[in-house]
Amino acid sequence: MKKRLLNIFQFLFFLGLGVFFIWLFLRNLTPGQKKEIYDSFVHADFTWFYLSMIVGIASHVFRSLRWKMLLKPMGYNPKNLNIIMAVFIGYLANLALPRLGEVSKCGALTRYEKIPINKSIGTVITERAIDLLTLIVLFAITIAINFDRLQNYMNEKIFDPVAMKLESLQNPNIVFYIVGIFILLMLILLYRIRRRYQHNYLYIKIKEMVKGFLEGLSSLKSMEKPWLFILYTVSIWVSYWMMTHVVFYSLTETSVLNLNASLIVLMFGSIGIIVVQGGIGIYPAIVAETLVLYHIPPSSGYAMGWLLWTAQQLMIVVLGSASFGLLPVLNKKKKTENDTA
Image: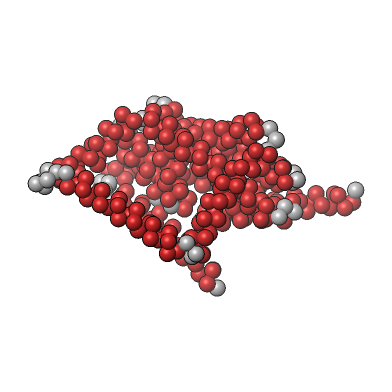
């Protein structure tokens, strides 16, 4: 009962957080700008929207085949269709609650492929580690490519306004002293927490998770065809990139943007999806703010954000639901055919 209440609370919390971000962005817009967002969304060329969904499906197929490679060294060889549908079920479950997707897709393989859930969970941890490292590398590359553009934006939106407020201080260096003291206090606090709670359940779970990441990475040494694993990983992220870029063509204002613009939207948008479950509310706002770097009006940027978010979520809802219904039917049919053979 307590666990169910906690799950309900988590769902309502992330939903409320998403609604808050929607309100936070829209409250500063004029009625005219809100109408522009609506008009942009309604009159978009949805051909590119649907093409983005197809590219998104390809990314999940690549992810499924990569996951299969991690299971093979343990002696398991699930059917391609089963593992693809399990991945879609996992993404569908993730829309409801954080981390529920990992358990759901591993549970599907346990039921239909007889793969122990503790072993498949280990491969999911490996996948997370690989994707996290890939995201960090791509994010660093994106920052390096767009450093001047981002620096100008940060100066205009953050540093210059803060500097103006600090001009009234008699000692301008006081801000550095405050930051230094704050960092020192945080380090002391982290050290004391580690000493005090090193036997705490939460601390132990976090420590085990980090250990699992490292073990997952080391397990890659025994993998067959590591180049194919790398190819699948590259294909996943290129697909993410392309499914972002093709939607740009659905609006006149964003159709002129280049691949660099879609890369930076992908990177910063990924942060929104990590911070808020499913990225609801915050993802379109991040896209709108990111496209300001390319002089795209906030109304068009926000409409683009909702187009991107809707394409991704609609694909997951449709194919996740279809997989949830088809997986038992197809495997029952297969079992019947084997029994009669």
